[in-house]
Length: 183
Image (cartoon, helix red, strand yellow):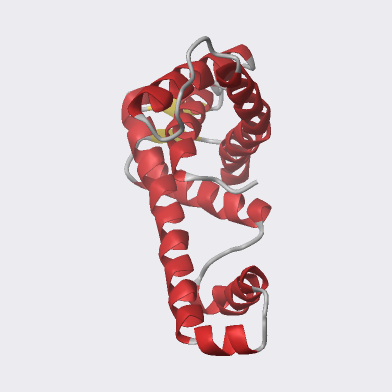
């Protein structure tokens, strides 16, 4: 599953919690300071991919006449173009490889800026970060489905996109994540 911008707050909280609770990692800054930096790194990665997607859309928009003439599938062309251009733009499309890369970025930053210290192998700490991301995203879908089901049976009808909907969704979502042990 792809990571989205609204996930980063929860994932960064999970990563900081897991690092703080890890017996082979010495924390040198507060949990909240670590969370802020992890969230910044995750956001930057996602925003980089979103900017890349915009480039792909611009390329396809230039070829709109040809796409219509040949009656081509726009979504398929998008993915083929993205796949073809990903390496030259430094975008990793495979989720597992991408999460590993992001985990390395987080680990490197936290170590270099003296947020954490450890005496074990880098890989061991990187695996803690990777597992936090992976476990969260696996549990996300279940939590999201449960929240949407609760909202569907809410007493008053909530309209998607409204502030009220967002507030209720995030409150219920956090409750589900806590129930599932993801936060």
